[in-house]
Length: 185
Image (tube, rainbow, N blue to C red; front, side, top):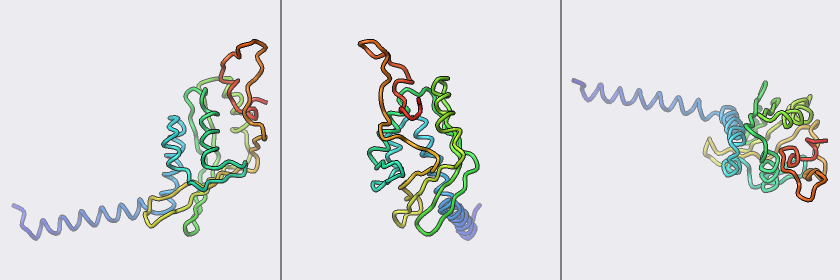
């Protein structure tokens, strides 16, 4: 039979362990790593509403995209990509107050060979890592939003989306026709 005293101390021990786990889990660096992994996972699953949850309303990147435009470009870029996967290599996180920067090499994979060729040329061969800047928006330890993505080696031309002229009156719909021009050239 469990006495009141043993039950009290047992409950106290469980509460202490749960508290220590939450302190460990809610560390800023760990939260930014988890948010980045979950953001990439939503992109892999083409869950655009889920991806929008991670992107801050004041998002701006080096290519001139805002919150709405970056989500549109992601959706359009990956519309015809079969089985996309995002692989992160050597990620690091630097936290300075409410700002954290995740930095790492990003490799994109697809089940489509034509698309893989374009991805290898335009994204996977980049020498510099991508940087994702996250801001902590409130007192909640899990409230981090993506405010900027950058990579000095990755360039997106001004006229990034176009259809390839297939020479017929009705364009042939292929994955390559709908990829950003920057990935096809």
